[in-house]
Length: 179
Figure 1 (cartoon, rainbow, N blue to C red):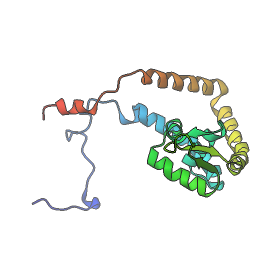
Figure 2: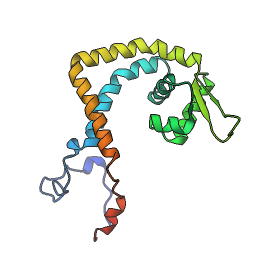
Figure 3: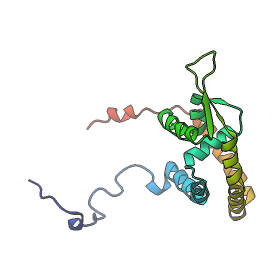
Figure 4: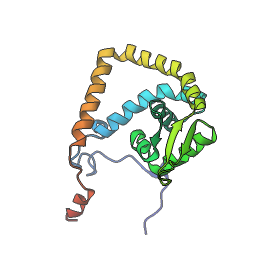
């Protein structure tokens, strides 16, 4: 029977233990999802304090920002626009509605559909945070450069478009590997 070990008993793996460098993949630090996550974290680290001061989470801010640009939207469409899963969006909307920052209703023509809109109180929260947000954007632009920021936006849009046209490879391809 194998002896249980504590973390203190473990030694670092030797470079020649057969594991390092044996997976035919790019380095973890060079993976596109990780690079995008690192960049997102660097950006959001700047915005989180002002959101926290306003009593908002990142997801709540995302919803309020999306709603501020329109009169009302179907909840399913809001989920797509904000990249939030339905159950998470439902919980967040319930919280925002309790704080009277958003309003939900069902159209009389189809009670199964849900519509949501931002309230004057929600707009007031956005207006309170907006100057801080714009100051952060100005500092990001100063440090990174306006041309670089524009190029980054264009490249991200091009990447999104190119990948939107790319067929998704099923994870079932793994099942075809002989064990």
